[in-house]
Image (cartoon, rainbow, N blue to C red):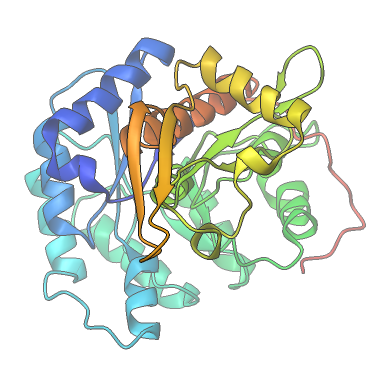
Length: 336
């Protein structure tokens, strides 16, 4: 199973940082899986320039439909380049560099998503179609008939995620023994339990960089003997800079000693030490000043990126080799 790292982030504006992340992934698991978004055209072009000819990297291109949807919901303008025609042109211009590309889907509109998939096929392309859970199941059936690789979207918005996915996997995506009928990609899927529960061929998410930005790192659960990747990780606020209001979580220095030592043990094991800082507050002005004594995840964004990438590499490597059977088939379930 392959987890593609999504997110348009500072690394794509700094070739040294991006290639450092690639080198880390290649060292740990032999490949660097990177998802680029056409919505952020400059970043997508930079990613292809840096990684397109690199045999140790696998690039997947997403149309950026969710980013466009969010922009519309927030009253922001859609970039002029974001059209299906320009998306097709971009793919054709960079076909040798892109390993996989998704169809130009439309959030919540199964009919238009299917028509866009058909149009791209007529233009000589072989996109991975995107089926959004909640749209008519007939589109999924048609995608199954036409292709061997299907992306499943709208997972994050499911109120009862596993009940709905159990139904779809039981009735449409696996055979009588639970083995997947097609290669399946989980769009925007960062949940460890959901990744481990279903026989995905690949998934992507940007959680790793989102956590880094607000001063957090993902730490797998410890059962007393090993790190557990079949449970959701602890999301730990470690940065001295980010306030609780921004992260939403208490700082790990407030944890009970045993729990705090477990966090430190994991960070030291992956060579992303917490670091040390000295904080002083001016009694007259209330202004805070910080001296970094030892660099670590508490002070360095790059180290938090590294820690979070290593978590998802650990999760990826803990998943059974594809294809593996879906073990929760049930005939009585309904689509929710």
